[in-house]
Image 1 (spheres, rainbow, N blue to C red):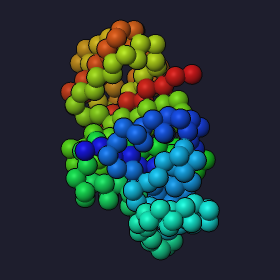
Image 2 (tube, rainbow, N blue to C red; image 1 turned 90 degrees about the vertical axis):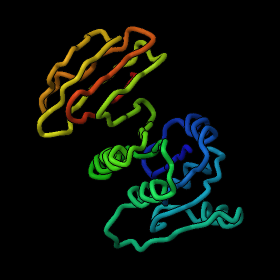
Image 3 (tube, rainbow, N blue to C red; image 1 turned 30 degrees about the vertical axis):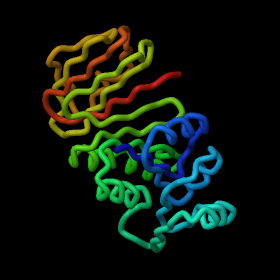
Image 4 (cartoon, one colour; image 1 turned 45 degrees about the vertical axis):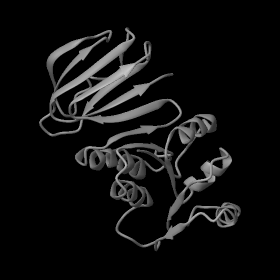
Length: 211
């Protein structure tokens, strides 16, 4: 089953949020992510968080529609983003999209991106979508279809770096090492109908971008 988590970061394309929301089985909004959902005419199935960034109008709409709210204290050991991720993991969802993960707070943005690690370790297919980027965490293989012309960057997140192969790209690689902290994997481009990223060793963030 597929789930969508909507967070309180920037969402520039409400139509894309609306489209993704209609493709999943369950929508969970974390705190202010509820505002985004309602602006996109989506009613979440559950609201979680400390409710410090959700509007009063949104709360009234949620209550009117009988949507359950799981409220947590402001002072806690996990962010609303992680609480939302833990919920969908515990419920057994195997395909999770996160939107609203990128915002002005770099600490929250990085923490949200690294939540993909938790999903990967649970065998869950996860991605983060914002206006111009889709972010994956890959430790085996990722196939990107019908995205010719998109930029693709591979960033190692393991201290030992990663060993990767790339096919269908402007710069193809075969069993190539990218060291942790290296920019070798930045701004490649898909040139065929199918781009394949194969990670032989380590883990990397794969970021698909458009200008």
